[in-house]
Image 1: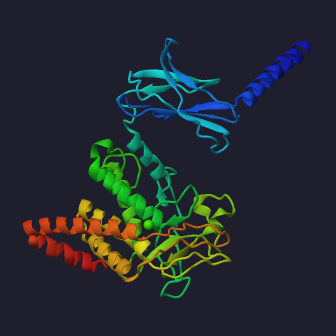
Image 2: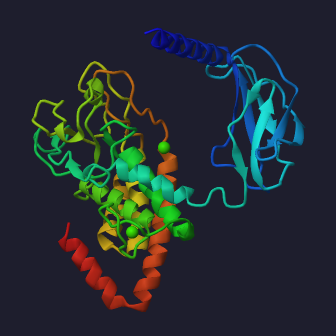
Image 3: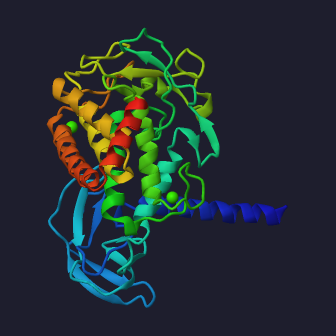
Length: 386
Ligand SMILES: [Ca+2]
Ligand SMILES: [Ca+2]
């Protein structure tokens, strides 16, 4: 019995000591966790919860423990977030590859790397998050969710008309789905695949499960986005803006058991009307369609080029036309909470759309000049699919 009591006291002392150590730490050094390339700018940030100051820092070789670089801190930046004082630690001048630790005052950084290949695989790795966010079939869970979406609101059809808009990605770690964020993500995935194909692999199928399908995974992911956007712009004069609203935030539930909207597992699908919307006390300040229409058009136009798809081409043109006819912003719809995506500019979206359409038309001209019959056949197929 005595033995156990002693062990308990030793454990208690150990825990107490640990707690005191954690509580007394008041400053930290934050680094780029991926590391730094030898020739790139290199900055860490020292931050403290006390109003103290430091004037210098040192870099220590992780293996030998020797100081290999000494630097002066930048000017005091003052408070930021939970911190009272912050300073930048610039060590761009230090270019030797290796594993290091930064020591600044009482704070020590985690170990980090300086090396030519520190970013290798990073872009491809980020696609894991996109696959985890997939709505409809989710390859991370190997299960499907939100397959009942959804019922319409604000549209030209009677409210609560069912329309199939299952697919796309959940937004920001909740289950909401927006065109404004999804079309933006889709365009960037397409552009990344176009401009940096060597940064991505082919280790997943179109549905996100492991496998090879002779298509870069970044373009598989972009295609997943485009397929959903086509459902959200199903006719040349119909644009939908979002699925679900802030009732989403009222509690935790499994994605396939999302019954927060009073119609089984269906969720509301908001039509873009160029007017303020919001089912509860709060309304957005929508004035037009162009911010959303422009994002649709730019994603479809770039997708049309990369996938040689005339349905995407036609949808790019129809979304563009709706944006031209309805200048203004199309904000997301709130409900019981006052916050929503308060986008106040639309010209940037129409500019990107215009540039993307010009590139699409130039690419089409090139293809059609080479094979006019193929273009005619594709256009007919696209029209039949409308
Ligand atoms: Ca693939
Ligand atoms: Ca904008």
